Image (cartoon, rainbow, N blue to C red; front, side, top):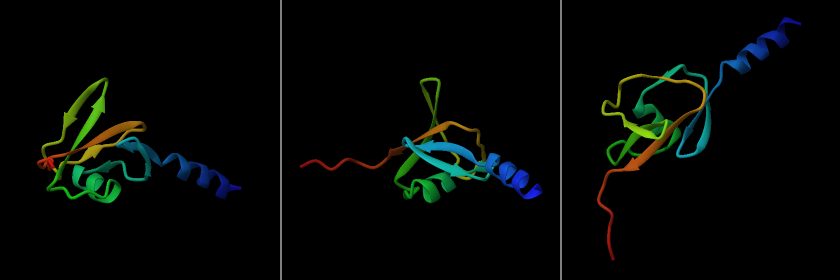
Length: 87
């Protein structure tokens, strides 16, 4: 019977975050912007920036290796930093 309780507790340990409106379930309580960009968004950190969208405002993360304390429902936006080619 304890196995079911442990499974339920393990399920509760997952945190749902969104990166460009794509839902990701993570088990870490903290991640760095670099980890989110590389592991979840699969982006090159030299070409993009990560921002937190909260209450209609965007907060850009300047430090790629500074831990972010994750909470359920956080929304992150990836912004391309390079020049846009024109034709």
